[in-house]
Length: 134
Image 1 (cartoon, rainbow, N blue to C red):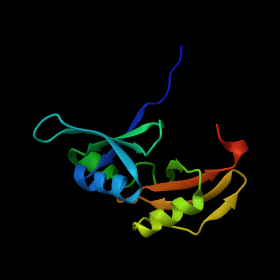
Image 2 (image 1 turned 180 degrees about the vertical axis):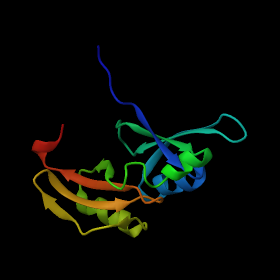
Image 3 (image 1 turned 90 degrees about the vertical axis):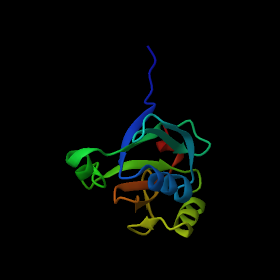
């Protein structure tokens, strides 16, 4: 049996503001945006040019889901965006208004810096060392 992680649900307040952030600021590709009803859409984004797992942008419904927006991983880094050129990606993201929470640093696994998405979830931008790439 062969399996892979295809996509992960990512809670958002509003579909369009989330698309603007992921596509406009992070440079992701909009894979799909289908209207399922008057209030529900199937919105999928993924890093441009990548076959990496995608994010299903799901508009939060109800108090419990709304409370999880921006804290999907309990204030831990929960998302890891790999790049083949950290300096280029960091500069482009900074220019487009992405808020980095720290200066870039070099670790045993690669060059990294933590940034916040539009809701405050923490992400690592990482250029892994060759030995740490799966």
